[in-house]
Amino acid sequence: MLLTVDVGNTHIRLGVFPSDGGPLERTWSMRTSPSVTSDELALTIRGLLGECAGRLSGISAMSVVPSVTGELRRMAADYWPGLRAVVVAPGVKTGVPLLVDNPREVGSDRVVNALAAHTLFEGAVIVVDVDTATTVDAVSGRGELLGGAIAPGIDISVDALAERAAALRKIEVVRPRGALGKNTVAALQAGIVIGFAGQIDALVDRLRTDVAELADAAVVLTGLRADVVAEESRTITDVEPELALEGLRLVFERNS
Image 1 (cartoon, rainbow, N blue to C red):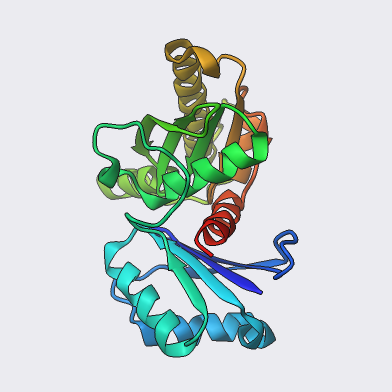
Image 2 (cartoon, one colour; image 1 turned 90 degrees about the vertical axis):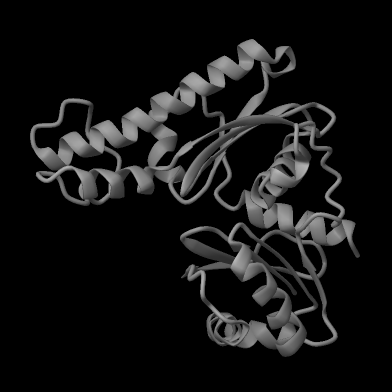
């Protein structure tokens, strides 16, 4: 089995794929800690995987938290010695040309999502990732990452409102009944969820205008908050919550 590990700013997503190349079998989530050690990672991941931990044939991982990237490598070497481990970083083959000013600035999550989306849709595609940050990326029909837009994510905005506005507090982020909130919680939910969906639609519309080949491209939504935003957006065509894990599988295959 192939273990895929996607380390985000707030959560770590785990998934296992069968060795025969079949679809994703199971997923788990755990909290991200910038100070986590390789031993702590291994202990938690082994506990979550259960019997799957002894059946692994390879590991494919990425991290947008620099302090965790090295710990991932140490974890693989110490606890699964002999297994091939691929950690996405500059120099690792992804097959995604980065047509941006400084390719080294592009987060591994954006690259992996672009690879998975282009492979899945076999053409130009717009990738929307709603997580700690909201990213809207343009991928050409040749699989090139053309660039994109980055905005604050839902959770960052909720935290900022609770911290900076004395009369407001943190709320559960769920799909609102409508835009007309009759109390503070409902009003916040409407503003956050519908507002972010509108932001995504505006960015997608602008990308379609700015890049001719994206005019009829699919728009795929992924990320921690994908299920909340999907129904409120008019431009989203497909929802793939585990797009990053699928991309990590593809990266592993390209580096085997």
